[in-house]
Amino acid sequence: MTIGEAAYARLGLPARETERTLWIIGDDRAGFEAFAPTIAAVSNRYDRLSVLLSARDAALRGWLAERFPSCRVLPLPCGLGVRSYLKRCDIRVAVFLAPVCEVPRGLASGLRRRAITTLSGGVGGSPPQLGPRLAAACEARIEVDPGAMPQAASAGPRGMPVQAVVDLLGEMLARDLKPLRRRRRGIGWMISDLTRDAHWRRLLAWRLVRYDDLDALRAALHSPQTILCLGNGPSSEDPALDTIGYDAMFRVNHGWQQRGKFTAPDVVFTGGKPSMRAVGSAIFGLQTPDAAARFATVRTFNPAFRRSRFFDAHDLAPSLRAFDWGVLRPTNGAVMLAVAVALQPARLVIAGVDLFRHQAGSYPGDVTTPNAYSPGHSLESELAFLLELFDRYTGELVIVSDALRAEWEAHRAGADAGQFDPGGRLAY
Image 1 (cartoon, rainbow, N blue to C red):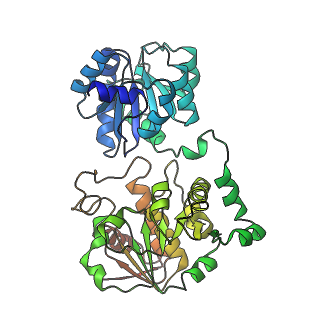
Image 2: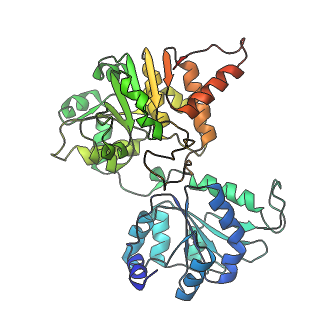
Image 3: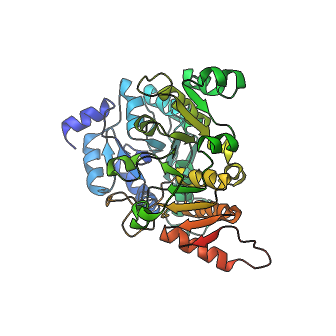
């Protein structure tokens, strides 16, 4: 890292991180060295995770860059740069390694405001040395026993096994922090709430339309008989799709725009402001009230957009609420399929839902993004949910994604004839 890059980071302007980040802060080599097995294990477990290491001392940061070449190394932010730093690095969990005694007031406040899970950590037996601000900020203490057996069910006298610590960190990294953050409910919240009232919904309809049931969405889509659902995996551009007709197209986020194929979706499922700004006239499928508030803020007052339309997927697809997600959340692709199945078209065509198993990588033409789920999602929960969805579907199911089709075929073949009422009829 150059002097200029370090200065920008302190001011809150590090290069943006595209993946969730585990932030580990320490003041000496021994603390980082003791935590090294945990750093290695969590990096190996979660391919789509950034591990950021920070220290106040420049010499220690130089050693960290050599000792942990796969990790990002940055100085701590200062002053007014804290908020931007935490946001640009997408920090979800912060671990302060003993013997860190205290943190600046602004950093403690920034961690609290962004609801970032804050922990103190060290090797079992090392006494915690926390100042009052850090002690108040920390949710829990992690004590690692590198010598403990991996299968140990609970912490021993010297702490938890490394794999148990990794499991715990995984749960914390999976949290959705937006609903937990301390912030005032602004104009977007007010407008999105008003669209739930019939009177206000009529008054706001010239700028913002909410569909709050399946019949309303079905009518807006002109009762489609065939719905094409495209995830973002490589099979979303499979040549077989060129000959498949459809009445409505569902897509996820907006990365497909630059590739110029299937670029006129009827519904886009997202939760991010960039997609809300990038996509023009499609109906937006959102997952949370937070997303609805962001959508209202981004779209209602922007003259570049005409009337904007959206729905909360949980209002239309009860399967999303019924499934036990635990600390995880469904991907936008899973939400897309939940709404499509709830509409029960005569034919459902699915591509681009490759479960991060496609040999071409995670996305079309992308050879750098790890072919794996991010810590907020998991293959196991996602697949279990999708198979339950398909069990409920009664139309013709066309799955272009090889990995998903193989899982569905295995699921159908393994079901007991007396206990399984096949839903979708698999077509090729």
